[in-house]
Image 1 (cartoon, rainbow, N blue to C red):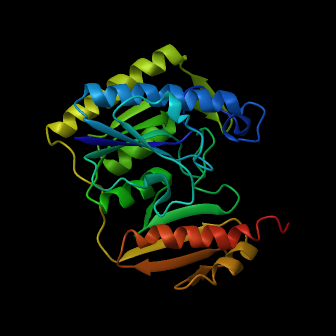
Image 2: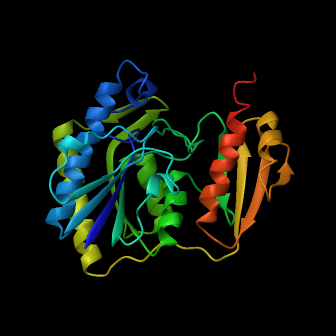
Image 3: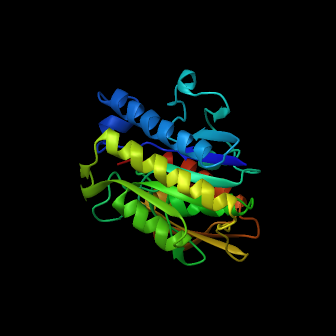
Length: 278
């Protein structure tokens, strides 16, 4: 049994500010250490729950945060960017996926560092009318490859979001309670380690017992993207297939769930060229 871990940073133990999650920030070393801390607990939980191999995808920022020298035998690291499927690159062929250190979608109240992929461009996302952020969108990409999400860790807001979208069987592991965008009531590392280890272990055992099914939607897939301003929408409307449905919102339709990733990142790349125009 292969367990996949998509490892983000904003939802990790003790991380509450952009300075801790940005490689250019003065406190980035702390964020990187906490990502590795949570990852170590999740990897151990996966193995003790029955995994024979663990695939870790560094899913934060430039995706070069995880120190491979700190990973043990039986673990493989997917590092660097760009990757075709980004935060879920190489998920295909795994039995189940763990979303570690994730955060809530953009616009969520009392959610630590809430955003959806690019905080300077993406205001909102929905697929087939269902609002979602990175957890939902990545779960859909994994589901298209027949891989269920079995556990998610982050703040309380992320856990509520993941549970409501993916169903009650997914193990949700809160390591902090958001008080504001950049403030939280945090568990100490010793306690969060125990929670992450136990949650991932339970999830792996449930996966082995056949208790999970992939998150899927019916095709065609209708992706609505809200941008931060009209200039960004002007630029992103040049992406093939774009339909302007509002002054700063675009719609795309595809029969292929994996094509959603290409479309979304084409929108982000186009809009990003305009994000400093003001």
